[in-house]
Image (cartoon, rainbow, N blue to C red):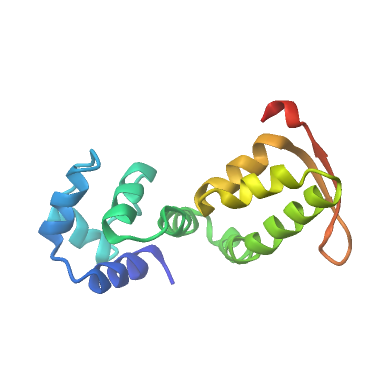
Length: 151
């Protein structure tokens, strides 16, 4: 599913008119017109910027990452799209494997702290302390270099 299809689906599910979505986006500091939203739905405009996607996600009550990922994948060269979609779907397992390893090496409080964050902030929190990851052939985490001082 591409960005236009997903945003169209989310707008339909919201039950809101485009003019209402436009007005609500202004509450988040984003000025989009109903005409612009119509063009996004129809695929006549490329996916919008991250700040517009964040406002739309808040208005449509969906995870911000969902729209940002869809926009990112939609803008990517065709030869990378398949890999990006695969990574997007694999990310929860990768995150869980990394957090399990962090627990195993005695940093359970750090793993718990990351798990307590909203999903959209977990990757950033992991990147803040993890400097290198090596995976075993089965896909599990083999080793992680962690700098807890960066936290």
